[in-house]
Image (cartoon, rainbow, N blue to C red):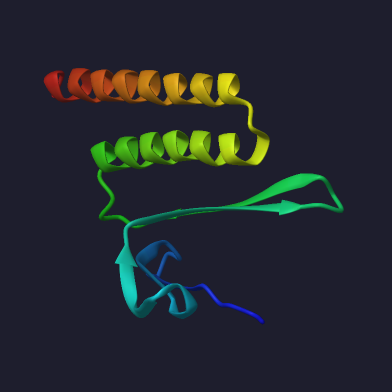
Length: 115
């Protein structure tokens, strides 16, 4: 049985993402859903390398990107734990994610204060 996850990206005249939409009919998401960003990672087992597609729209704000990366990193720690059973490294990744968000938020506050 095959299952599809569909991603559609509307580009502007400069080939920058204008809108990103997705659906996953077999996962219960029938209608296209709008998104401001996508981070897609694929593992090429033959080449032993990661392939990535990272896209975000012009509507994506820096504070949203900070939250998106934090939630992605934090979620990856749960995935890593389920895949490897290595709780110590999963906890390190969670701690890194929390530290990342604090530093990113502090940097954004500093930047906004200097405007």
